[in-house]
Length: 269
Image (cartoon, rainbow, N blue to C red):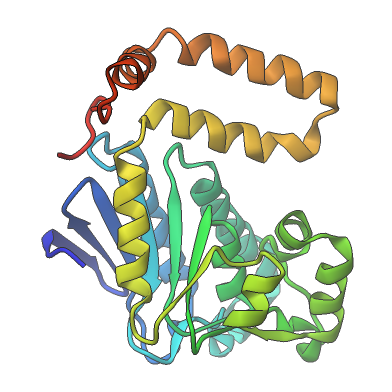
């Protein structure tokens, strides 16, 4: 992976600007990268920062260390917030994951190790998931007598279908990287210890694409499950109207006709 340009740290979350318009957000609470109310506040600030930064064309999210991408909430914090758990914890967590999902640029989860519970939900909010060959992923909340309250119950079935999602959610099934790839839960498997590098390679490729078209694709894909076919047609036509008026659309066509690689606005060399 290319060297970072600059690094910012906010206690338990760090933000590194890599070459090629790629930003990397890292949960830095090893060994398990557990999340707390405070960590979620820090994460939200950095997600907003990269979303608003026009120089950032793709985002990687990962975890520190080699034991966990993230295995969810720090249960030791629960007694302090149980009086209003949904408002103090879950609503903010859902808001952060929704911000990641709605970010108008591609987001890649570099799953370096275990992604369980809230960590799995964290990865589900991303557009792509690159998983270390030795990592595992799952929603074992049922074994604690609860359920995934930060997106797992609706994002998981969107990705892998209701039947497989029911199996994972109701049995608390934890999948290997190979199993996750087979059912379409992850995008690709990286060699051991190389998830961040593989995620960067993907992020760099994405950073060279037309940014507005990428944002429209992301928007349309997220809206698709909520639309009828007729609504989908009208929605895609509205996006097409906007896309075909962009300089990047002109450049793409000209490059194709000239048999050269396109140079889209703001893309790295």
